[in-house]
Length: 357
Image (tube, rainbow, N blue to C red):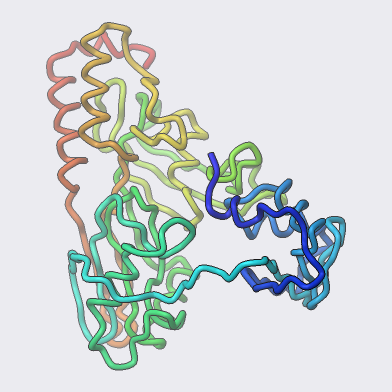
């Protein structure tokens, strides 16, 4: 499968008189160890491949400090790395769009929104319109000082497109700074509900493992040894809420907020999220081989055709008043129906059926 980020790196070479347009710019961190530029850019251009980056460098499209470099150039602290291409970059200006929002709470400093599954949070490759950020731009279009293109206001954190649930949005720079510090210092409270494959052995547990891009699939995250130099440290706590024999409803609380953290960690311990296609959850991983059971699971996939993950609770201190703010979001209809189906199924099955599952 190809993506727009893959396609922008397709090139047949650079003509001497060809005009170049800047597509991406990165400033190398002060603590960055010397690293080949193709490896450095691979981490930054998450939907691309090392081979395409190398071809772009060979074609003269990768620049450091305004000069083209070869694929084996090693980046150093302070280097300004740019990807220059022979066509203008897509206009990424965020435009207001009249998209319905489920506003849970709102005041002059912030709002809390309940995002539905299927809504992309922020414009990006392949999703330049129809996002939560576009909807917020419309909702806040009359708020003085709120500019959806200003990174000092707006979303404080994110959740995946096909994850539903609560997000907090800052209307002012002060609110975003103070809320951002709470996330950084891990003083916020966020819990998720997830339906996972399998019958977890323990009623609660702690998963620790670095999370980084899967070298075999750049759209997926993988788990690496804690303390290693691969990926970023991540810790997830889980607690069993309800058991359905072949699946389990769990609550997950994050110590960290890495990309796909719950999805990658649960996959890592052998319990992928139900219907999570990216991490193998669309396969029938537990249960018997009967046609009736397979039909039941396929019906469940159709009921909730996305990873069964919901950002259920969100807690933080109000950035201005200092008041503790706590919010809870009920399961959306697809997840409620999915869990109801499993409840009905287990009530009609003997416990012995689920041995060793």
